Image 1 (cartoon, rainbow, N blue to C red):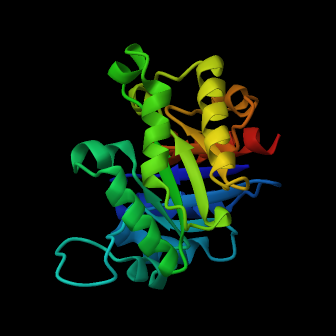
Image 2 (tube, rainbow, N blue to C red; image 1 turned 180 degrees about the vertical axis):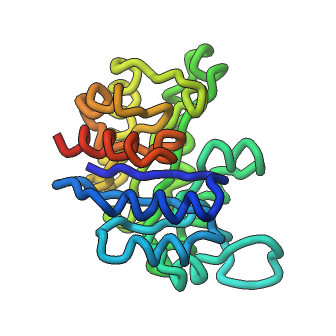
Amino acid sequence: MIVAANWKMNPELSVAAKLASDYCATSFAGVTRILFAPHPYLVPVGVRLEGSGILLGGQDCHPSASGAHTGDVSTGMLHDCGASVVLLGHSERRADHGETSELVAAKAVQAFSSSLSVMICVGETLAEREAGNARVTVLEQLAISVPSTLPTTALTIAYEPVWAIGTGKVATAVEIAEMHLGIRGWLDEAGFNQTKILYGGSVKPGNAAEIFAVPHVDGALVGGASLIAADFDGICAAAAD
C-alpha cells in the first residue's frame, strides 16, 4: 500500500518541520509513505525525513531540463533536493494553470530522465460525472497523460474525482470500484501491470479502511488530512491493516 501526503501550498515552515518530524515518529509495516512538500521546503523537510523511509516528492516540474522559465522548477533540481518522485496532472494544476494531458506526459518523460518516478493524477468533474462521462474522461486523461515509454515501475496513478477534493464528499465504494476497475483494465492493456492505483478525495482516518477494502485500491493520496500528523498516521494504520 502507498499513502502519499500532498501538502499543496501549506503550511508555514515551522509547522512543516514539526509535521515532518512527527511523521517520522511512527512506522507502518507494508506501507510506503510519500510526502509531496512545497518546493521551497524540500531540503529542510528532506533533512527531517532522513532514515525514516518516507519518500520525498515534488508537487510539479517543468517539461524542460533547464532554461529561461522564471518561477518553474526542473526535474534535476527536484532530484538534487532529495526528491525521488514528482506529482503530475493534479486537478488543481489542470484547472488553475490550464495544464493539458499532453503537458503532463511531457513532464513525465522529463521526470524519468532525471531518475524520478511519477504519480499522475486523473479525475472527472461533477458535471462530467452527472453527464455520464466520468469513465470516458478518466480513460482519455490516462491515454494522453501516460507516456508509453515510461517503465511500469516508475508510474503510480492517483484517481481523484475533482468534486471530492477538499469538499468533504467521498465517492461511494461502488463508484470507486467501478473507476479503479476501469483504470486497472486500461493499465494492464497498456502494459503497466505493476502500476498501483491510489484513491484521493477527502480521505480521512474514519473512511480510510472502507476505501482500502475496495478492489484495486492500492493506497491513498491525502490532502487536508495530511496536515495533521495524527490523521495521516490513522490513514497509514488503516493501510497497514
